[in-house]
Amino acid sequence: MVRFVRFRLFVCAALIAASAATACAQNNVKLSLNLLYDGPNPGTSGGHFQLVAQTTSTFGLASVNSFISNINTTGILYGPGINADTIAGSPLVVEGNPVNLLYAQATTQPGVVINVGKGPGTGGNLLFDVLGDSTWNNSAFIASGSFGTAKPAFIPDVHGNVTDSNVLSRATAPFGASINANTTFVVREGLRGDYNHDQVVDSRDYTIWRDNFGSTTNLLADGSLNGVIDLDDFNAWKVNFGIHFPIAGGGGLGSPAGVPEPSTLALLTAACVPFWMRRRSSMRPL
Image 1 (cartoon, rainbow, N blue to C red):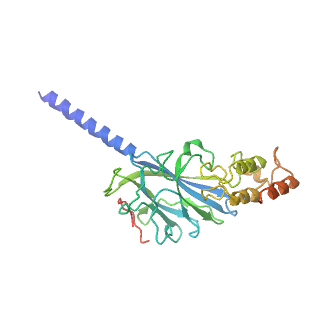
Image 2: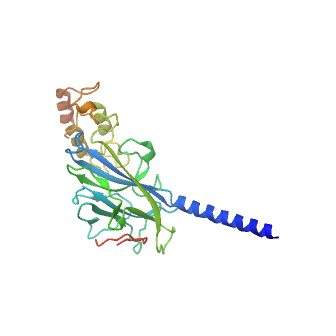
Image 3: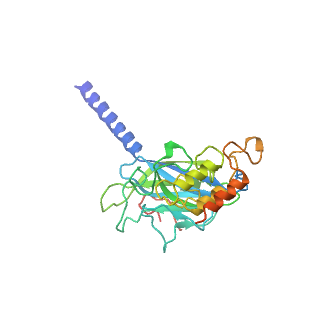
C-alpha cells in the first residue's frame, strides 16, 4: 500500500512538471532587431531598423517592452494591424540611450487583436523575412525607425527594467492580466537595397523592387521598412548600388556579374520616375 501511494505521488509530480514545462513552452517569445545599413560600414553609415516578433503562446502577443540603444526617437512607426496603444497617435517611447520602445495592446478598449506573432493571417504578419532568413518568415512587424552612426543593440536590463514580452491569457474579453513570457532576442544585419540577399546591391534587386512596386504583402523590397514597396525603397537601392555587404578584406565598391554600368543605372533611375514605464506582467506595462 505504501509503495502504491508513493507511486501515485511520483506520477502526480511528473504530470505537474510536464504540465509546467508545456505551459512554459507555450509562452516563448523571440524578438529580432533587424538592421539595414545605408552603406557597408555599421560604424558610420546609419540606416533603418525593424523590430519583429514570433511567439508560441496560445493567444499571441499582448506587449513588448524593449530597451534599444542608439536608435532615433523620431519617425518610429508601429506595424499595421497589431492594435498598438499610442499617446495622441505617437508611439509609446521614452527618450534616452537606450530608448524604451513599448508595444502594448489596450485591453480596456475594443479591438484587441488575437494571435499577433502567430503567423499567416495574423496582425502585422510579414510573409518573408526582410533579411532572407526563412526561420524568421511570418514574424509580426512590431515597429520600425532609423539609426545613426552607432550600431543599435538590445539592452537586457536597465536598472531592473528588462527587455521582455507579455502574451494574452485568453481569447475573449475580459482579458484581465496577461502572462509574462520567456523572451529571447537577437540583432541581425543587412544592406538596404539588397532585396535578393546575395550580399550585393545590383540590377537583380531592382527587378524585385519593380515587380512588387505598391505591394503591402510581399515586402522583400521594403528597404525603408515602412510596410509598402514605394519610391523610398528605390532610393535605398540607388544609394547602395554596387556595394557588397560585408566588404571582403575591407575593400571598396565591387563589380560582380549582373551589375549595370553607370549609364544603365541612369536609365533605370529615369524609368522609375512616373514613460514612466516599468516592467510589469500586466497587459499595459505603463
